[in-house]
Every structure is written in C-alpha cells, then in structure tokens.
Amino acid sequence: MDDPSCLPLSGVRVVALEQAVAAPFCSRQLADLGADVVKVERPDGGDFARGYDGALGGLSAYFAWLNRAKRSIALDLKRERDRAVFARLLERADVFVHNLAPGAVERLGFGYEALARMHPRLIWCGISGYGADGPYRDKKAYDMLVQAESGVVSLTGSPDAPAKVGISIADIASGMYGYSSILAALLNRERSGAGERIDISMLECLTEWMMPPLYAWLGTGTAPARCGLRHNMIVPYGVYACSDGPVNFAIQNEREWRRFCEGVLGLPALAADERFVSNASRVRNRAELEATIEERLGQHTRAEVLGLLEAADIASGAVNDVAEVARHPQLAARGRWVTVESQAGPIPALVPPHNLQHAPPRLGRVPALGEHTREILAELGLVG
Image (cartoon, rainbow, N blue to C red; front, side, top):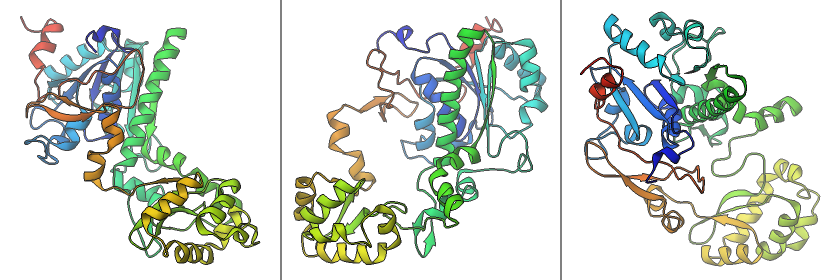
C-alpha cells in the first residue's frame, strides 16, 4: 500500500516486549495492518529467535517471518535508565503485549494493575504457557511441551507412536488469540473509553482446539485414536494408496459416501452395508472398510483415482512437501509471494491472509537489532 495511513490500525501504537514466536506473531499481525509496533530487545543479542538459524543469508527464518514492519529498540530493562525509557514508551502506547514468564513484567514495575492506574486506556496483553494464575503458573512452557500437555500429540502420529505437529501450533494459536483479543479490546475501547487486561494461555488455546476429541471422550469414555494421515473421527478421510502413489480425499456427508461407493469404488451396495451406513459405524469398523478401499484403489493409478473422485465431486488434494508448497500454483496465481527488505537484503515473504480488499497489508522491513533506537529516543525527546 502506498499510503500506510489508510491501513486499519494506522495510529495505533504498540509496545512489544517479546521473544520467540507467540507474542511476535501476535504483534506482527498488528504491524501488517498498520500499527506502529516498537519491539523492545535486549542489547546483548536481542530476541533469541534471531539466533535460531541463518537460513536467509544469515537471517533467522523464524525472526524474518515474525518481525517485519516493526521498529527495534535495544533496552536493558535491568538498568533504571532504560526502564525509564520503557515507561515513556508505554505513556504513548495503545497496546502493550509481552510473552515474558508470569510475574516478570510485574517485577519490572509494568504489571497490569500498576499500568492501568497510570494509563486507563492501555490494552495490556500477556501471553504465557499456562496463564497468570493456577498451579502451573510458573512452569516454563515451549511449543512442544504444550502440544504434549494439551493432548495434541496423543492424537498426532501413527498408531504405533505419537508425534508433535511439525509447526509451532501452540505458539501460533496463542499469538492469533492474542491478536484477535487485542482487536476486540480496541473496538470495545472506542465504545467504553477503557483499556483491558488480556491473559492468553498457550495450554488453553490448544485445549480449545481439542474440543471435538474431548467431547468424544466426555460423551463416550473413548478417545479418538491416532490415525497418521487419516482423520480420527471421520471415515474415509485422508491418504490412501493407489497402484503408483497416494491420493488424498475427504468424505464429509452421506451423499458423498454414496457417490464415493458407486462412482469411485464401483461398489454401490457398500453404502447400504449396516457396518458402514453412517460415519459413526464407519469409524467403529474402519479397519474392514479401509482395507476394502485400499484393495479397490490399488487396482488403479493415482491419476485414474483422481479422475474418478473429480467425476463424483469428492474433494481431493495433493500431499505436498515443503518445496512443492513453495512453488504452489495457487499461491503464484493469487500473487501471494512478494519480497521485503532486511539487513540480509531482499527476502521472500507471503502476503498475510487478512485479505481486506481496500486495505492490503503493509509488508515492511525486518529490523536489525536496535535499528530504530535513536529514532525512537528522538521521538521521546530523549536525544537531539
């Protein structure tokens, strides 16, 4: 966008005391939509995600993804002088977001109660592993630990072994709930004039996403099983073998099930078999059913099965690896790949999926550590 003042969050000032993934993902969404996000980093290395890898000409893949369009100021909050600068930043802020351990910002003097007295319109958002209270409050929490604690890994992987999800879903979930909660709080502030305290727990975010299997267990006493590349609560749904490779498809309702039996398997009577007549019965008898499906599909090539699925109007898709996603034709056709600036030079970036027609996001530069320190100090009147 040529005029960043037209973005939805133009004029919103965010102070982010953040590291790793969860809070940076939250604040990057705000920056994409025009907020002025000031990222506060330690002078001795900054956000530790800067050191995860050097995939992009020395720049960390995680840091590049999570921190574009922000301004970086280097402050040592153990020093009284730098804490005073931080306090000045908060005087001008609409939003304060952090993912320090519970109690850490309070020890620095920047807890919600203290700041709300001085800045009643401030929106204060803390993201932590387990929340600001309760017996797990002080436990350290990283993405894989929370995936396991929340039960996600009990549903992910093969029947023989659990597995974590291959991306940081606990961090991403909490960052997105932080982002959406901040947007709601900004809207509510327009009505009430009051700020807000937001307490985001990574465990609670993933547990929310676990509700279908939790309801299954609460209602029946039986939890869904790990099924690898197949759905553990819907059958058939997932990856099945053809004679020359896998095919990925999904059945969502009984109309599709009947079309699948007739048009793809060539077994119309199977749809009325009492063992498979409903999704619940198909889940109970999945071993028998999936053996039949693979026996039939194994007689055809992948291209033939995809043609049958298409003719029967059954949803199907590819099983892509990372390289194939990078050159996915749909992303290319919709112009999702662009470049952004960084200290390592231009790097690729995906346009975020906000997709506001009249306010396309700002994909700004990925900042070097402390790149904007002097600029921000000058705005605060602390340097000439």
